[in-house]
Amino acid sequence: MDEVVSVGGVRYALGSWGGVVSGAVELLERERFSHRLWVKDGSLWKEEPGHRALIEGMLGWLSVPMTMADRTGSLKGFAETVREAGFGRTVLLGMGGSSLAPLVLARTFFPRQGWPDLLVVDTTDPAAVKRVENEIDPATTLFVVSSKSGSTIEPNCLFDYFFAKVEAARGGEAGGNFVAITDPGSPLVELSKEYSFRHLFLNFSDIGGRYSALSYFGLVPAALMGLDIDRLLESAIAASGRTLPGVSVRENPAAFLGAVLGALAKEGRDKVTFLLTPEIAAFGLWAEQLLAESTGKEGRGIVPLGDEPPARSAGLYGDDRVFVHLRLGAGGARERLVEELEAAGHPTVTIELETAYELGREFYRWEVAAAAAGKVLGINPFDQPDVEEAKKRSRALLEGPGRVETPEGLEAAPGVSLAFGRATARRIAPSDDAGLMFGDFLSLASAGDYLALLVYADPDDERVTAFFDEVRRGLLASTGRAVQLGYGPRYLHSTGQLHKGGPDNGLFIIVVHRNDDGVAIPGRDYTFADLETAQALGDMESLDAKGRRVALVMLDDLTDETFGALRRFLSSTL
Image (cartoon, rainbow, N blue to C red):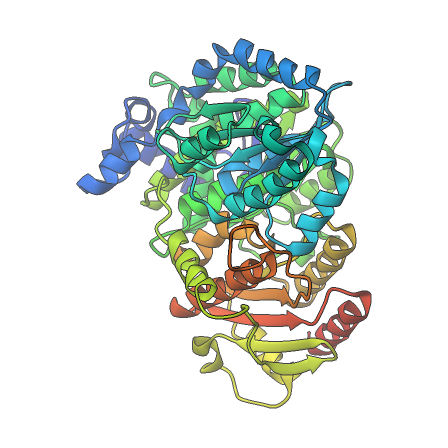
């Protein structure tokens, strides 16, 4: 295969990896990937009856753009009634596959004039919950409770909290401020009836959460913003036409992308690093979940970096990377960096968008690509076997007596303490010096490893995110390793599957803060602070049980003073 090829308008600079990619393409052709995908043949991925049944019941996303194209009229009609009712804002309460596509749309598009803006709440951080409450008028806000299972703890707790606020403002008419999106038969169906929701949207049960961007889960929020959902779907339908059974993999832009990603991951180029123009930067968060949760299992997987800040030069990157440049308009500094990366021998993929509405095409392209990469890697891309463990451990902590507290740790700096998983502690020298122990922790990394900075804080607090972006840059510059940055509990429903089920090539740094203002959740025995802390500690326990290398950084608060102390500690350690 040539060093530079173009498939469906996508440019691939493969360098010396052309032969490896050709092998993956031939595998997909030999296995009749496109045909067996569309006839929903689960044995394409796994022969075991259980796997086959699950897979064959999770492929509804293939045809959902066409299905939804026939329903846009009713969606637009509903959105118009919401606008006419005088709602000033829409707040979506969701997590993972139910919230990430709406988050992309909310950050990429502005609402049409006169239409409500969209705020996505996918956090249990008490400060974030209070921030949202202070930003809205509950009486004139429409809440969308979005959950495939209807039993996800985060949106359920958020519903409990915000329903109480709306009820205080509107009394018995509070249900008119709520809409539900869920699967048939979920607990949310009955909840919506019990509380007299304005509307219930039943999604398709044969679509998994991370593949639901072009279903009701993505299109209801889009319609409520006044976006042109027909245009969004048109680009997806056009993309689907290039994946049909009669199209060869070499002419199928989505399957070819999956072949490239899967083949390179098997050769150690498993860090898929997105370089996105600012207008569509949020797409990386959605793609992170899709790739990590689809491929990170059975000790294999792709490590996506959806929003890692671009390095100043190609020389700062290791040889475990493949770069994906999604460009809307002029590429600017990122385009120059891509040229430098190609010259340095890194494989790159360049995808151009003429308008932001072509994100519909990209949602579809990447869904098929994840399925194809799963075939190349030999895994089932439609399950998530390791997600539930952290949830169980968090629930156990919440069911215990009293508040959920962080453990005693080793003081690292004023307001900063440190602890390690049991399996990790056995691998580093005990010391009273937190700096020495953290340095030993980082030295556990070997070639091809990455760092994951997992922060439990408000993901939309600009001061907080600016600080942890700085920490991430420092880790990248000092270690030369890929650095994921995820905000909990969002990442638990995104990259969390990869962290526990994928290859053992991650070092995990969980950051949690103590919070005196717990923010009570109506009808529950725990606060949002308890829930957030339990989720952090539950994930640490799960990672530790898997033998993963994990550290816990505990902050007394999120003040600039404590951030300064942590900054100085890290500077002295790295």
